[in-house]
Image (cartoon, rainbow, N blue to C red; front, side, top):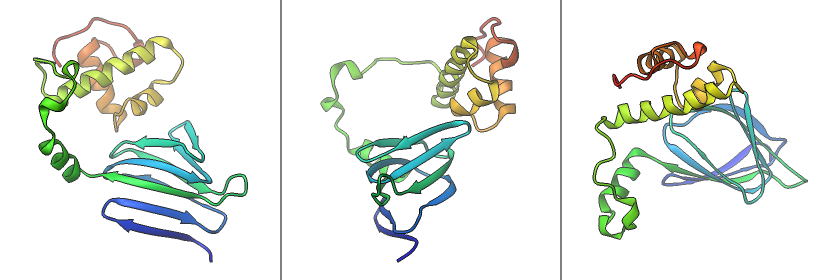
Length: 177
């Protein structure tokens, strides 16, 4: 039999290929945890390639475009389990979580004065800034690697925080974010 065989139960997918494999551009609408049972899964994010084999796991972020290539490896057919973490599932999980059961060091009285969205943007910009300073990669690659979806938004946010465009590197830090 050729093609993919899948079994879906709730937000769990069991996937198995019986031909020479498959490749597709994929954009998840949920966070996904992949567990490899056998075969090979190649995940390409811009210029970064990650290969998973038997026993490996990977987390693919929501709304992140990746090229997935699923194929046999060492004569073992591709077989994997994909766990989808939808917003509805995560909200339900966190609403039932007993806060007292968390480790004491996981609680913090006040993490930030920023809204959650601005806090995430700030963290992404700080990660990008460190990568830019290292000089190891192109700004475009860094932009997508830290989670921005478009270069224009990244450049504007970076300039707002650091006072210069990301291609110019270090400037002064601003409290506008």
